[in-house]
Structures are given as structure tokens and as C-alpha cells.
Amino acid sequence: MALKDGLLIGEVWHKRHFPRKNEFRYKVYYLTFALRDLTKLGRSLLSVNKFNLFSFRERDHGARDGSSLEAWMRGVLKQERIEEADGDIVLVTMPRHFGYGFNPVSFWFCLDIPGHIRAVLAEVNNTFGEHHNYLVAHEDGRIIEESEWLAVRKVFHVSPFLRIEGEYRFRFSYSSDRIAVWINNILPEGVVLSTYIKGVRRALTSYSLLSSALRYPLISLKVIFLIHYQAVKLFMKKLRFKADLPMPEKELTR
Image (cartoon, rainbow, N blue to C red; front, top):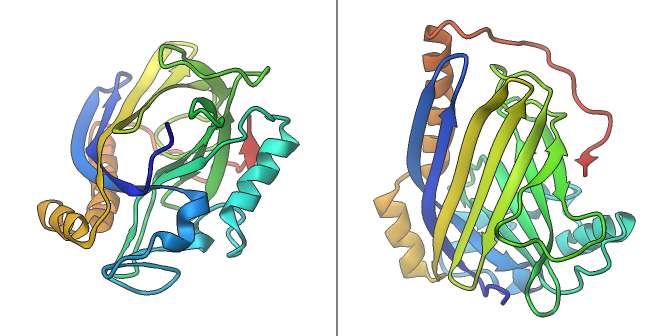
């Protein structure tokens, strides 16, 4: 079943396994909505492509030129021949706050008409202003079951403390009231990083937005602060910082 517009109230967890252990978790909330309903997303405290207490900006996603996000994602699916994803495309992403925003990763759930996952696009941003898209799907386009791990080659650096090699393994759980994503970074030596994002859906209203902002204030600034705080911790643990890491030739890896 496709989610109607809503807030996903949840938790982010990271655990680094080697060569130095490091673990953290924090509360967070996301907008979640079908792209076909983007024009209906606005609320008194939430605007689309305009400044507000909360806002969503189309230029932060997809082709990043302000063009239709649904048309862009449909084009990607057509290019990759995933014809089975003929239902809603649901975007899970953090809103901007007072015009500021930073999204480490946004997820595009590409569903079939009954509401099963056929593909997921993970839109990844790093703190250097760079981005890359990982498209996760079965080669034959069949339904992605909750118990399945799907692998994609790692080609883009998020943390300069991790090598650009190995693969990511993704697992997804999706229903009308909950969403969860697990991501493991696998190196030849084993699992170097385990992460998850889990959340429970709530109705998207001005009250729920304001309540979330009061419970988890300045979440965008908090995320960027925690990223740098964890980087300092890793530096103090004498992990090697890798500068000037190369960018992949293409913006999409399947």
C-alpha cells in the first residue's frame, strides 16, 4: 500500500566495526509523500519551493534543475528497464528548516500498482557538496521482499575515513505505517559499517511538524553537527583521513 503524505518519526543508527569501533544513534524525522501529490504537500508551516519554517525544494533532488521529480524518476526506471515499477513513487527525505537543509540520504521507493517495492533509489549527499545515486532492484524487476539483501558496488565517498571499495548491501521494510532501511558497507575484511533508518508514520499536519520541531529542534543543523562531531572522534582515534577522493564518472550506479 502506498503511503499518503506524512511524517516519518524515527531513529538513525550507525556502527563502525573496524579498524576502530564507533557507534551512535539519534532521533530524526522525515517527510514522506508520493511524488504525484507534491503539489498538495504544502501546509501553513510547510512550503514547496518557497521559504517557510519547513520547506521542500525540488532543486535539492533528481536532476537538480527544478524539473519534475516524478518525470525524472520515471525516466530513470525506463532507462533501466524496470517496467514493473508502474505505481506510486514515494520520496522519504528531510525537510529544510528556515531555508537550510542537508540530507545525507533520501530514498525513492518505486512501487507497483498494488504497492510492492520494485526498486529503490538511494540519493546520497556528502558534506563536500557532492552527490550520487544508487539504484537498488532485482535484474528481472521482481518484488523486493523484506528479508532480501541487495548489493551494489560502492563508488562514492560519504565518509573520508572509509575506502571507496567493496559494496553496500541494502534491506527494506515498507508498509502503510512504517518504513525501515538497513545498509551495510562490506569490505573484503568484512562488515565495516552497519546502519539503519527506522520510522513510524504520522499524519502530516502543521501541528505534527511543529511538535516534531520542538521535540527534535534544528534537526538539519543537528545532523551536520553530529557528522562533524563523529569525524572528530574518528580523527582522535587515529583513523586516517583520505582527502581528494575521486568522483564516479556517472551519477547513477545500479
